[in-house]
Length: 408
Figure 1 (tube, rainbow, N blue to C red):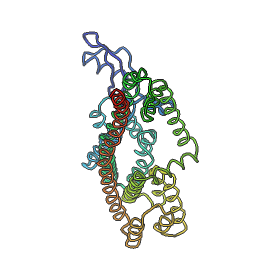
Figure 2 (cartoon, rainbow, N blue to C red):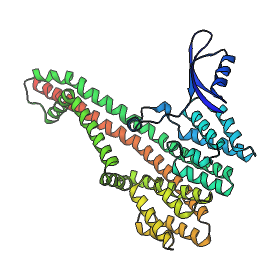
Figure 3 (cartoon, helix red, strand yellow):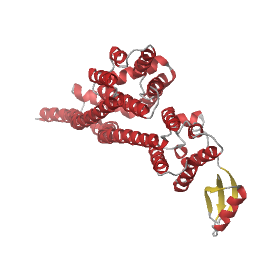
């Protein structure tokens, strides 16, 4: 069975596009005709590869597979295999259930390759944008140990846990971010377009204006005349920072150092990275991946160069027969609670359980810290914007009061 991509016309002459699963090209045409659909163009479906530019700009959003879709696919495949259904029929069922899109085409390609004798890991490795090395190594370990359904279940649990954590953190940040953007826009519009109309009346007063009013007029004129320059500078700064972060090692290290050391946010970022390290390492070990291989996989998942270096050094020490907790303690990036629990896990043979406990604790702490931070950001932004409004009001009213005193 193969997947074919088609363009066809229905009985009313409306164009339809989609995919159909059939054993061959002629069979696909016949199946479409039986549905009263007349194919105009039909060809084997091959997943499109994104160009580097489109991937960098993230413009082909409709040709992407989300982490949530992969998690659902993993859970469904685990359930089918756990029920005793063979791999190829399980993939065929998932193809029928999947909605039209890249994931459906990908599953079909995987099914075809497995049907030709390849392992599930080898078939999935052709799609690195959908199945990362972490995912592939766990599937490989599951196939080697004969527990692929259990490994897939752990993978689904892990993905759903990570999505839930990041979803809660993002949802907590929505309110202050919306307040920031709306408040900034309102104040900018007021300063650049409304204040000049009000302060223009002061030009006919022929008197010395208060310093605060002069400052308001200067800021207002600058925003009105050079708003485009401000946008250009902001855009250039963002592009420059992204270039340094992504294209240079020094820039990436500086950025990652700032992420874990900056006030308030640094503490949260460090907790999230540690929780991800512990949860991922525990999941890999429970799935049968060797510790050294698991450490190298986790190094690329924590999304921080400095923490990744500490993990890499710990892996080197493991090769020399040393423990895991010592190198992590020496790095200074892992709190004593983490390293002590890892040490207890190593000594008692319950490393996976200890890592999961640490991950759960730090995920909860990170979520609590974000909630506290966002609950404080709202009032702080209201106070800050209130001070700006007070500055504008005082700057406008002060010359009026002085004029009234002169009249008297």
